[in-house]
Each structure stands twice: as C-alpha cells, then as structure tokens.
Amino acid sequence: MHIHKFERWWIRISYVLIAFFIATVVYGFVSMDLKVIGNYQTIDPQNLSETPFGTPGVREVTNGGVTEYEVYVQTIQFAFLPGTSSPITVPADTRITFYVTSPDVLHGFDVAGTNLNTMAIPGQVAKFTTIFPEVREYGIVCNEYCGPAHHIMEGKINVVPKSEFDKSNLVE
Ligand code: CUA
Image (tube, rainbow, N blue to C red):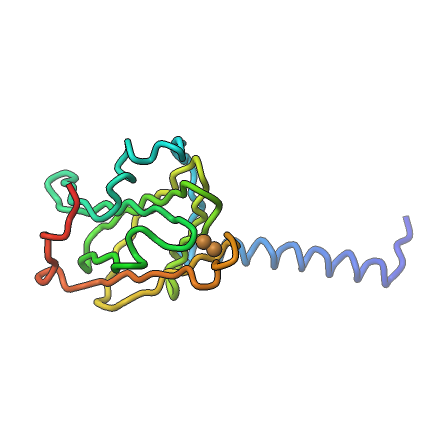
C-alpha cells in the first residue's frame, strides 16, 4: 500500500508524542516519587465525632518499636482542623501518616512546595505517609473550590527538630 510521504511523517510524529507522554508519566512516578492514593477507607461524614476525626490532631503510635505519628485532619468550610487556628506541629525525620476527610464539601489538602496533595472527599479518608527531612514551616492550601471563602482557606505545618518536639500537645 502506498503511504504518502507526509502521511508517514505524521505517523512517526504521533509515535514520538505517545512515547513522550508515557515517558513523562514514568518520570513523574519514578523520579518525582508521585503516588496515586488507593484503597481508601470510607466513613460517615455525619458521624465524624465517633471516629479519631472527632478529636483531630497529632497522635503518637508505635510501629514495630519505632515511634511514629498520625495526624487526623478535618477540612471544613473554610479551615483545616488542626492547621488553621493552630499549626500542625510534627517532628522532623519521623514517619508521619496523615488522615484527611471532610464533613461538608470537597476540599483540597495541598502542602505547598512538596508532592503532598490530596482531595478531602466527604465519606472517604485520604491517607498518606511522609517524612519531613527539614525543620521548617509549610503552608497548607485548599486547592478545590469549596465556597465563597475558598481563597482564604489555608493552614500551616510546623516541622520542629525531633529533640524539641513537645508531646504535651498530642491528642489521646
Ligand atoms: Cu476548602 Cu477550597
């Protein structure tokens, strides 16, 4: 079958484009350590008070003899609980697992300057684990439109040195 010269070039270009798009996805997952959050747990958004989300905050857990922390965060119109009125304070160089959900509408939980970014969906629990290597403050922004004050919905994560981490602010 005769294929016109230009036709052949367009076929080649489309192969190159497909390879390029696949390469960008592979690059994101391998080099930038992006992950898709799977296996989410469901929850009744009307009854968060009966779950750890009812007392949101930082909890200490022991995992195989190693001290780690869990952070339960509620995203509400228009604040992070905790995060907005008081920062989420966690130690550096320690495994921190975040659990994020919403009792009202869809919100975002985006830790600016990192690859930590999840949706907070009513009825679902978003979970991700990270280690903050640096002692510094991070901003949290809501990146899903959630109502008239969406643009002012923000919070803070305060990463402190392990030795200075004050356990008196942990929740039971
Ligand atoms: Cu919450 Cu936008």
